[in-house]
Length: 124
Image 1 (spheres, rainbow, N blue to C red):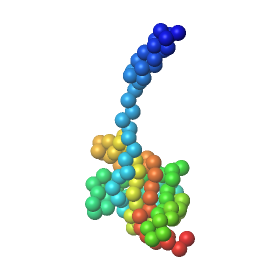
Image 2: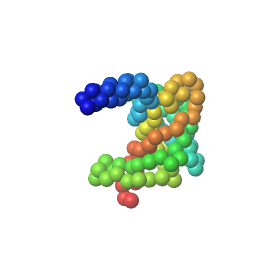
Image 3: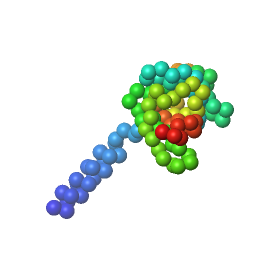
Image 4: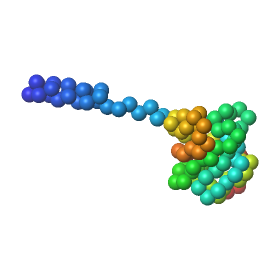
């Protein structure tokens, strides 16, 4: 019985060690400024302190969480693309693979989440 358990553990460890490594980590990127809003996409440019998105990057945001945090009350609210307007400052959460796409010259990324930083929805 002990030998069977030992062999089982060796097999499990071997299979685990041979598994693929997923390096597509989630990153909360620097700030971006909204330059255009469409139904399922937001076009952004880098905020002053950021160098991730360049002068124009299209962010696909269909089906992702978009939130607003009221810094005075600390209340977090779910919002939609309809609540975002040109000039808003946002934080875009994307994966490493999407950042690599930008570094390779693509200008469209898929977001994992977006947070509206501009404090203008306090009275919702």
